[in-house]
Length: 345
Image (cartoon, rainbow, N blue to C red; front, side):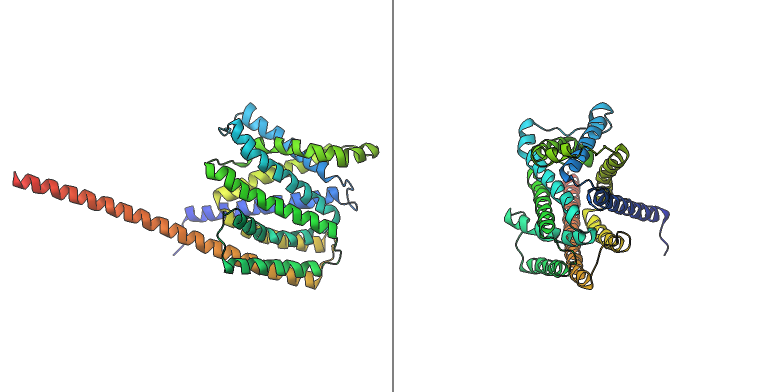
């Protein structure tokens, strides 16, 4: 039995979203590494780079929402903004700052290996905030992922403790941000697409980053008088970061968050291969063995999530079917009662 044109079209479109997201995510990571690495573009100012991204995204989101009115803003009170968006903005600013800083000290391949700890962090923080139920088999899976990442770290040829601390901090902040979105926004029925998310969150990040920028990077930038702002490099880099946000919305909105997780694993392997073959980063057999163990743990975690989603969907359909059957029986009983009353008359 052949696949219909409609189904084939949907499959091809879904694959196109996956390819676009992988390409843009890949590009942003490699581009950021190129700018920040002292051996490449040699501009080791991660806070400044993050602020450029946030300023660009804020301006473009404002243009789309307020000037061109292509996207509807979300109805949000000042109280909700202060209690929900501001904490998320704070976490997001630290996550971006720390993750960009790690590119100065670590290879792209090793950073991707450390990012495999994201499900561990999200699950642990979810349990801490009572958003996830503690399950011994899930925790065993999390320990297996952590063990694999530990082996990969042990085999890292250019291990840098400060870089690892920064990347682990970025993972912790990002995981907390994801859980906070669930607690502070989703639970209140507020859903932000990437444009409205940047419209509300990006200016907030810009403000939070300004304080450490004044203390840490502003004095160093004043001393490096030889630097000239390259509008092509920073403009295209910021545009890629903005486009990545849109790609996330398309991928999750048109497929699922699980699809993005699976696509993320493919992207990680591509980045490791690129880091080894093009950037000439050292990738050891122990690195690969450890990451492969972590990869198996993440793959199993995604499989369990998928089965849970399928079970939930099946249960939902069963409830709907029972409700429809109940309505039909009520209608039949009502019709039968009417017929009996007419026959008695």
